[in-house]
Length: 141
Image 1: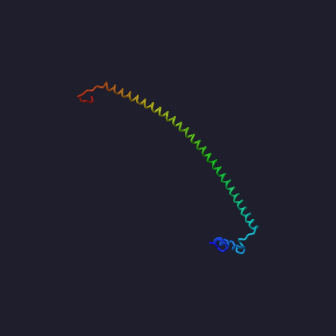
Image 2: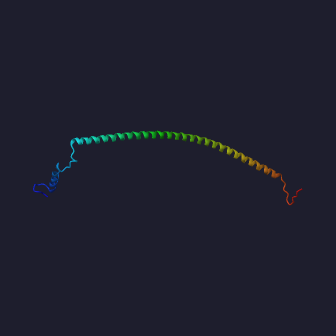
Image 3: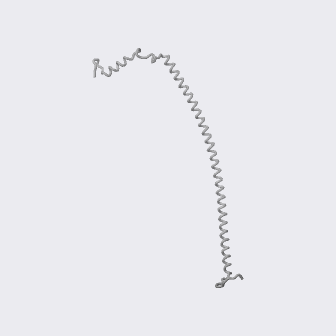
């Protein structure tokens, strides 16, 4: 759509809205002088600096805490490694003792088998010398 001046209707509306914003229509609170704007910016900048300093302090504190935790973890890991090494040594000793005990048990078992075999042979020899008499009644005399 075209108006009589050759502008579209939409352009005309925008122009009237722009024209309506004059110094009289802007509230006094919204009007700030250059000096108050600079003061406000300085305050904001000071707050930002304070927050930045506070953040830096917190960051340093967190770094110290993390370093302490890291040191504690390293100490704990060192202790655990020592404990594991001790356990490995003890395990080796136990394994050696177990090997010795197994050897002794095998030795005792083999000697027990030899003794059992010898006893069986002795019993068989004794049985050879026993007389067997059948059809006789046994008496005490």
